[in-house]
Length: 437
Image 1 (tube, rainbow, N blue to C red):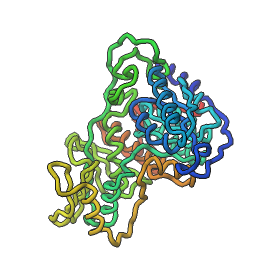
Image 2: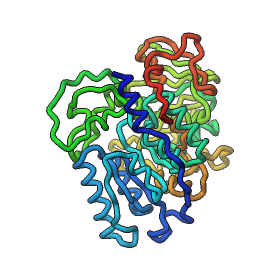
Image 3: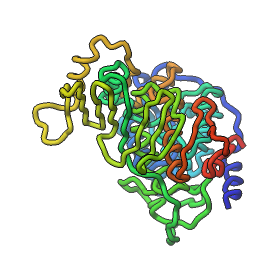
Image 4: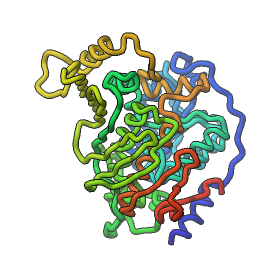
């Protein structure tokens, strides 16, 4: 059955010839006719949010989804927006069932991928081969090999890729990492990241499917199985489907919130270009061990990201922020029953007190979406580039591998391979794919 799906993928991701790529001179301040053009693959709730961010700044020319209702709804949303906002673009969007047709259009500069995890790598790698820049939701990939393939393909094809880890564009996370990187809480001992558990094998029963869904295309590289509405709820819905809970299609909470929080842990530790060297279980918690001896611990509950240093602590989550140094609270906002301050005010307080003469300043992005479009124009790497998204998602996959195999793993973050001499764990081996064929 898995061989059958690999055969399917070889057909879906057949090689393409890169077309000439002419970059618009400006981004969101340009007249509509000269703006970056985009196509969207996967039109669920997250993609509709991304549409709302990109439509005012870029020209959306195409949308794609395997569900007829979602596809038509997205088409109507785009054309309605440009009809009502003629200064933003032209109402000339087209809809596709097959992402290959969308990516094959020579008039599209960049694509946005917001599909289930198991369908990230196919469209991304095909778009990179075709000379298009890519915005791809997190977690960047469904397995380790895909992450390595994407990182190498971005470099080979000289493209720009932004991973949807938007916490990098939120000030509370950047300032938290700058505090850590500048030694405000002393030498870091360990970091705790709070998020849920790994995915489980899919055991959902068969359901009758209404017409209008290309189920074979939805499955794509995953094993063949009967339809179940939990995996792909029909039509337009305002919730996040639970496909992510199943290993064949998603990466669990580890790849969902873990991709966000482990990304910030790596940023704060200065490990964007590296990763852990060992992954082990202790008290039923996954621990990522880095070459400098620092541990990143997976907690099932907590503050989000919690840095522990010899002189204090930094805690950060969306809209919450706490800094303690030598027992004294420097800044604190928990969002609960707090009327006399805000998260922004507490972040600025810590910044003014502790980072006035900071030696380390991190990449400042005030908008994850503007940052992507700006980097298309400048050809610089964005705040959450493929290297950052790829290495972060590898951390997620290593944790999932650990929970799956229940054995300590040794990892080489330079060569992207396991080093304990027993070969790749079964799950990684089974999911290796050659997307170029």
